[in-house]
Length: 115
Image (tube, rainbow, N blue to C red; front, side):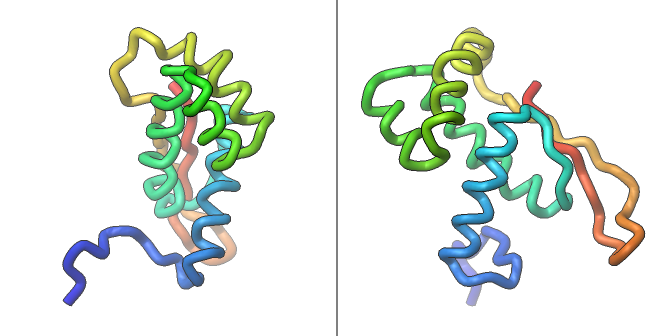
């Protein structure tokens, strides 16, 4: 039975999957907009939303958690810029826009961006 196994696997081992999500989250925070497959965009959305919420609080403990998760450069931007930008917003920091299918393999594509 698959009870409680809601996350997508992407055909990768757990460590590769975690590295993929961290990389996508880091890129999204730094560039504020990335193009990826629809499934990856939907999977990285809650991960990034939780990171931005930690950045809003801006405590030392949360900053250290962010550095461990997405690196120093992205953590600094999350705390300093994104924390201020979203301080009055109660969630919903990202937007997913669907794009036409990719020509090479036909996978559904999407843009995920910070609102």
